[in-house]
Image (tube, rainbow, N blue to C red; front, top):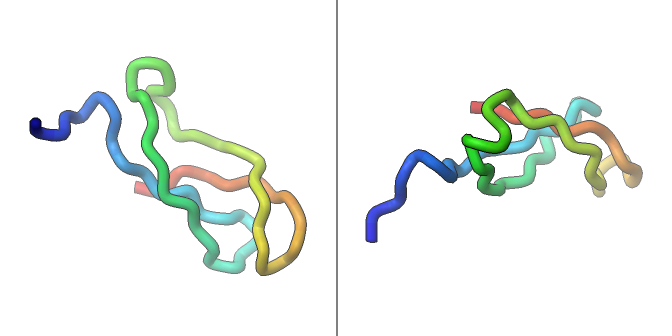
Length: 54
C-alpha cells in the first residue's frame, strides 16, 4: 500500500521560539489550510500555539 497525499505528514513548530516540534498527520480534505493547535511545549513548560510547517 502506497501512502497518498490525502493524509500527509506535517511538522508542528512551537511559536515560543524553542525549536520544539511535533510530527503528525492531517486530513487535507478537512483541513486544507495550515493547522494551528495549542499544545504543550516541554522546553518552556507551558501550552503554546504550534503552527504547521512545510
